[in-house]
Length: 263
Ligand code: 13P
Image: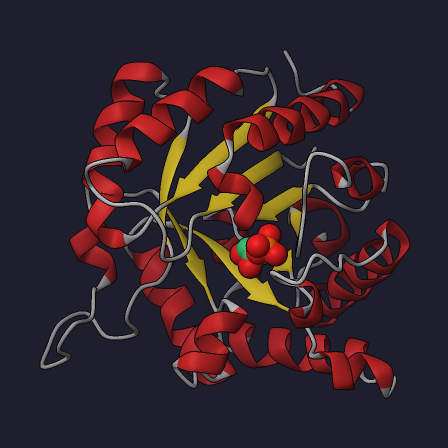
């Protein structure tokens, strides 16, 4: 059975001085059986968050928000996957904000995926269409192409063994307060699983967790988790608020129990 995952993407928020305390508070407010929790702070806060969680609740994993596609070299300001050893066990790859701001291509994102798994990091691959693409009926083609581009050349068995997670984040729903419907997200999850099957994931429909991301809150998470094809959420703005995280993870725990994951 697939994990139920709630991953917090703190984006460019928090400092080393305050991140540990926020992580500690979120950890203590989200202790629910069966839900895999991940906090992805900025790089400079990884150590503080890791130290706080080791003390408060080692079950909460730490993730990075990005890695470079090379192992080392003259890449000023960048962070390579092996540098995260001891700091993170998960990594977000291909977030739409990086596709937009750092011109990341599917091919580049695919290389990052390989670096992530080589370094033993569990990757969350983000995909999602722009508003204009949805409005012109191209959403599924766009997401399918993103998956094909990023996963080309990767061995499905190896990716699955490394715990690949896919986050469907429609760009028009990120930070806008305008979330997709549960049915929209579920339909795209089915598309994603169909794409995985054609890419060689024989059991693609069953093994890869698919998260929804885009203006997720404690008030709307239920609409997504009511869909059997959705396995959790990648949460942005609301993930900085302990009350919101408590509500989101509490709802995820209901799904985990229903799926027999709560032990
Ligand atoms: P918001 O939840 O702020 O819309 O952000 C979603 C997101 O981009 C998570 O990666």
